[in-house]
Image 1 (spheres, rainbow, N blue to C red):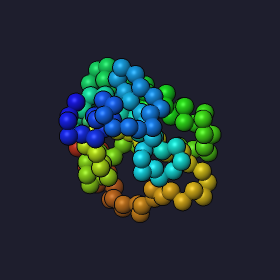
Image 2 (image 1 turned 90 degrees about the horizontal axis):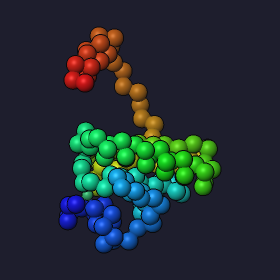
Image 3 (image 1 turned 180 degrees about the vertical axis):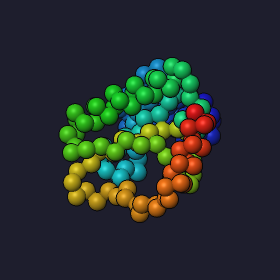
Image 4 (image 1 turned 30 degrees about the vertical axis):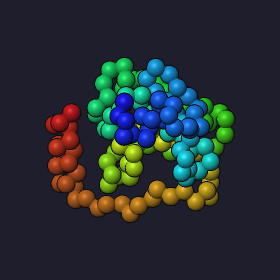
Length: 137
Ligand SMILES: [Zn+2]
């Protein structure tokens, strides 16, 4: 636990939240600034900032909880769709530096927007980028 972390303090019960799920590895509650009704956050109990910092059971536990909570949101609210995503890094929109996945219920015409212009890459750039990434995995 990080004493300066809002999410660690929520997990510890020091700050109230609208909890929807918890187990040995993960914790889930409603986003207090939702972009849609039922916008839910799923996070590991352990304080990490990046997905790559999670290992073993903590990682698989988070994945299992994410799947379980997403299924719960679907069953409870019956949205037409879901966005499930992680913002990593401030530039990507991560506001709280405790890894968390968003589950956002979606309805046709709900006004939630994720669309951005498509980046044009040359054929050789696709090759370079795929090689750069695949070499590191
Ligand atoms: Zn934390």
